[in-house]
Length: 264
Length: 307
Ligand SMILES: Cc1cc2nc3c(=O)[nH]c(=O)nc-3n(C[C@H](O)[C@H](O)[C@H](O)COP(=O)(O)OP(=O)(O)OC[C@H]3O[C@@H](n4cnc5c(N)ncnc54)[C@H](O)[C@@H]3O)c2cc1C
Ligand SMILES: Cc1cc2nc3c(=O)[nH]c(=O)nc-3n(C[C@H](O)[C@H](O)[C@H](O)COP(=O)(O)O)c2cc1C
Ligand code: FES
Image 1 (cartoon, rainbow over the protein chains, first blue to last red):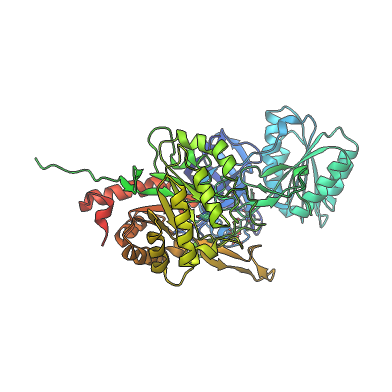
Image 2 (cartoon, rainbow over the protein chains, first blue to last red):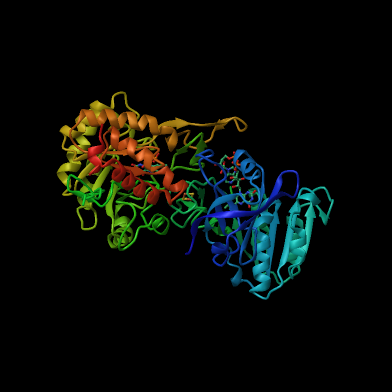
């Protein structure tokens, strides 16, 4: 475990759609440690407003100096973040969390929906560059504009499958339809997924039916991001004792085996 | 040549020796290992003077259902529900690591009955535990908690039971959710408390107007962070003038200036909670800042800053 709390310079922070931004930070202290599926806590405010740092998945580590995040302006914190400019600095705590168990898979399928696309770029890059495996990458969003970072995905050696709800790019519909076809007629042995809860549930169910194991990246409201406050609890699947417990997203996750998560 | 006296940051609270007066508050630093690298807990020179571990009960507790956190202006509402590993696991798995670290270890305890508090206290009469902090105030759990801290008689009974069962310094942690903090403080002092710490969180709530329901699954939660500092300061002032035992100030401390305010109001040490979660490096800043301020103002120890 090697994590840091440090000030990072903003290289660039620009809108890629009306409300989605790509943030590039100069953070060479973090890049060597970072694993796909991990996240960082970013200080978005000033003078204790807003008080808490915000969690964001590591979107990409294109080289040893730079770390990238992709985020949607969802409230006051992300709105303040969107106003940072090149030359400003942002306090970062990271890298945090466990990351995906990609090296246990020989035929990985990556599924990202909406801003669940965020961790998939770094994951695809590492699987391809370090694992020397060509992963299947299924990405879905409402429209082609929200299929962010497509050029970066195309530059990675992977099989890219796209879906949009409005049919503006790729197949019209959801990532789950594509996933169904792919696990049906390929050697897929593991699914790695990130996206909204209903999507993750559907992805997990498809994987279970196909007897393929499935890792999902979850979200929860966080305060510390390092396992100290126990605030980021989500319900776990019933244990053998019959008692339901809690998983802590920031420390035991954010990536979980789908079988450990309570889906109802 | 003029002899410049170095300020002495060490404090002794009823036998509890602290290298400096800045402690990590219960519930915001886990059992220490979670934050060690970021706040500077180590085998040699640790940055904080001590750590108060997450509240420990006799049996493990699962805690409240999520959502457990809600951010408010300059504050944080939490309803963790005292999730903890229980005293047995604490002694077997958490204490050995804490023993190896060079800082004071204070164990925060909570129970559902006077007997439970006493039993916990006697189980913790072991090497490596430097003091007990008795949580009679947590607002999160429906049973216990509120009842002990809000009633001077119950507070005194818990204090007496723990004092009798323990060989360690006993710090009673007071709840701010009371009408008169001085009355509770005096009751605890008379019952044998060695020191008091305050405040625990202020009971509050938040509503999600889109979903038309309370944000926290537990409806109510405890408010902490900069928003509570003025209330905490006022209560430390009141308590320190009501009793003759040492007071540890807690509530919203986020800078060395905040800590100095608490010393001036009557505290001999402080605990930092929410601010450590927001920015772990703040602990080092607070410790250094206190030292520098004392040097500049010629204060020879922490107590001498009291107004
Ligand atoms: C592990 C993890 C990774 C994430 N990765 C990304 C990412 O790559 N891109 C991205 O756009 N978003 C991501 N999110 C969600 C992101 O953290 C929230 O959108 C953001 O915190 C909202 O802050 P705000 O102040 O703009 O919103 P507000 O609504 O003003 O926030 C109010 C409070 O709710 C919290 N909150 C709101 N939505 C969420 C959420 N979905 N998850 C957790 N806390 C939330 C905020 O932290 C804040 O404390 C991630 C969340 C987690 C837990
Ligand atoms: C997430 C969280 C968990 C807490 N858990 C405990 C606990 O287990 N026992 C306790 O006595 N106080 C607990 N507290 C209260 C703090 O120790 C402290 O009294 C309070 O937060 C005020 O200080 P602060 O504003 O510096 O955080 C908790 C506070 C927070 C924010
Ligand atoms: S956010 Fe504090 S434990 Fe996960």
